[in-house]
Length: 161
Image (cartoon, rainbow, N blue to C red; front, side, top):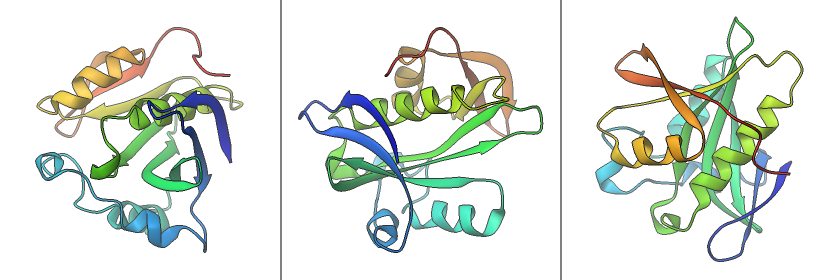
């Protein structure tokens, strides 16, 4: 389990936990809002399959206290950088600070891993929510692109404890 001191706006503690026999169904059932489907899969189940079958990504369940509210995954690139991807907060849980707390928690944990040279993520430039969220969390666009997405790298000090 990856814990931080971060809470959502409802006061629930946000944690990241491995996807396992007890929670995989709840994670698979996470769905975004309809207007977000241009940038994320229609269900987190697709991310779980990508993690299970692709060999690169590691999926995590996002919890608010003891309730699964989202999905997040991470990977290690050849250069030692860590990547965050597949973030999805269930439509019913959005607007409560869950996504910000989850990304911050994972980014701080990844930074502390031996050999981590950078923490990066990518997002589609038309995804206004991502374009507003990630810079607020300390991610700065690098000028690089990954497919049709902008690459951003975390700058500045760790934010959670």
